[in-house]
Length: 120
Image (tube, rainbow, N blue to C red; front, side, top):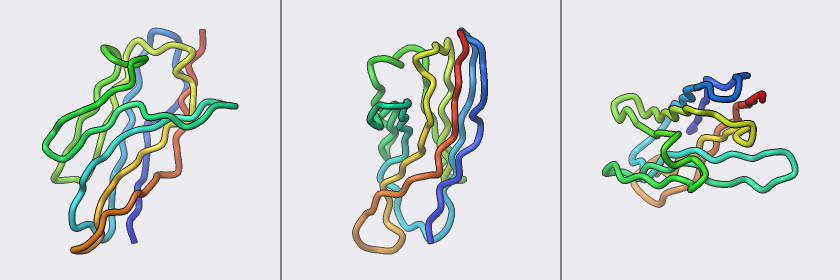
């Protein structure tokens, strides 16, 4: 069984910073990508930052220059450093990984989500 466990959410004032962590555990053969999505109330889940194996990254336009994704391959952990937070960043943040638990196809796995609330 593969599990993604997030941590690091919370309440912060506008302009502040938070760091999210997501650790993947269980049977993991190969990780194709790890990243972060978010879902605000009444809105669809959207990608925030994705890191593909090899290190290339993609960011949503709304977070470029403020958020940074990084990964510790030895720990199968991905981080999201969020700076200059704005009230519109308020959402539940979900970790996602595309990985293969054994030699074979890749599947998409999700964490349980962590709440980030930015007060104005």
